[in-house]
Image (cartoon, rainbow, N blue to C red; front, side):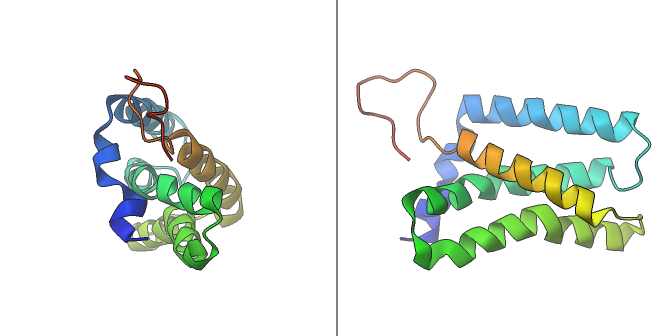
Length: 133
């Protein structure tokens, strides 16, 4: 399976996916601006949510299809979106980090979003059987 088949870049433009991403990003930005938590800021919210939007459905697709040869790609996408970006950002800007707390919360959100955004379909199905994963 090719990487473009896994990533499915055409899916990133689906209105329902963009709407749900924007809604979630809005909550993250609100939290970053409202709560005084040293490792939750606008930059990390944008980066982590952006990589989750792009990579989580592909990682979920690998797990759902049980494509064990591609499992390292799924784990890399998960690690980068949850931990790699987090540590890179905070090391670059000098913020205090709470790695364990971030790991648990972000892992849950990564896989939840991955499976929510997994279906390759519009909100209105034109014919039976047009839903694919």
